[in-house]
Amino acid sequence: MNDAKTAERRRTKPRRWLRHSNPYHNPRPHQPTLRFSPTAWAKLLFLRDLGPTEVGGFGISAADDCLSIEDVQLVRQSCTSVTVHFDDAAVADYFDSQVDQGLQPSRFGRVWIHTHPGSSATPSLRDEETFACSFGSVDWAVMFILAQEGQTSARLRFNIGPGGSLEIPVGVDFSRDFSASNQADWKAEYERCVLPPQPRPPAIIDDWPADTVPRTNEFLDEEWADLFGWPDDERELAYGHEEFNPSEPFAEVVHV
Ligand SMILES: [Zn+2]
Image (cartoon, rainbow, N blue to C red; front, side, top):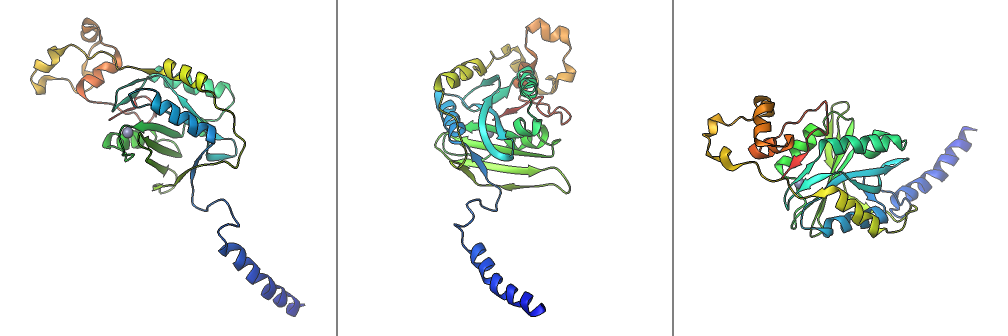
């Protein structure tokens, strides 16, 4: 019996070696990879190229694979060529609508996507801050950047256990079902969501001595802000200051 087992091991071991040494045998790489469906990738390229500004949104993951992106959803945002500012209420609405459709946050709120002008998909300092602060309270998240000229970067961060992060490859996955292109709907979504930046607050603040300019919203009382008619989010843009609240992960997403 033992001899039979030994013989079995001798016979099967080379086969296992062969199987694992053949890179074509297993089409799925062992390394985590962010994979877009052809439709999601086409939509992201379309949205990136539709206007002169950056755009940002979230990836919707497949039910059985959190790194398989089936759709890209914009949320209402103020954009310039180098900034995206998500509207807080719109992010909340986006979360509500996805939950109403029966999705878990792990499918729609973990993969943060935005575009960059030019050739570089390297995260800016502000991107790093946003990723750390706005996505720091969830167990995992991905920051994905697509540059205008095609370069990509994807960072997978784990916030469980000791935590950690790694750069992961990006690809387009043709192995799963995917839906048809729908540029009319994508354009409508863009027009609904991507807004020009709000007018800059009055220039009077530029004349103030720097040490008298309040640095956060906490120093601004409502009366004062109302006097100038500033929307809440403009106060932060005016000072080049953003507040990130890890307990409200997407309260403010501003980057350069
Ligand atoms: Zn960026």
